[in-house]
Length: 175
Image 1: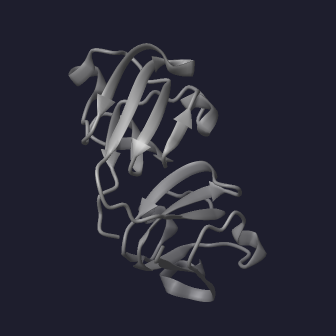
Image 2: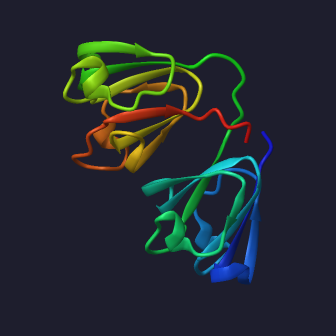
Image 3: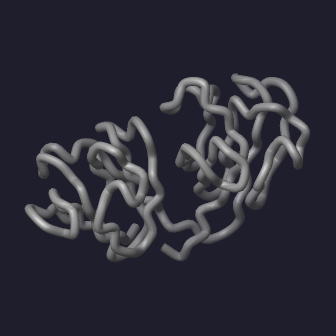
């Protein structure tokens, strides 16, 4: 696991800063607010609430001078380092909660679950290999969820009530 992200209290990398190289469940322990950041290496998911809750944003190497430029209206409250993954990607999606209903296996990105699989919703999934981003709208737009390997019996319990999953993408960046 290698990654470094530096958070700054103010826009344009001003004010107090905090350098983070792993998961951080509560940024308020280090900074009163976070309005810009610089990802020096690795990939991270940042959240606008503590304990990896709330809106999520995928951050790759680069400079983010203003928190509104990556979609956060408030402040970054927690972050997760995305582990590097070498090898195959595999997940199984299910139409209903608790792995019920139609199921389909994915090994690559999908721009539209409805168009490709003719299912109206994806309410549970099993991430077998790799790290994935799931999006509310087709073509990887709208609110997103970061999922690491594991079983997810109810996607709506992961942060967004009433969110429908419409597209998915593997995190393949050599972060």
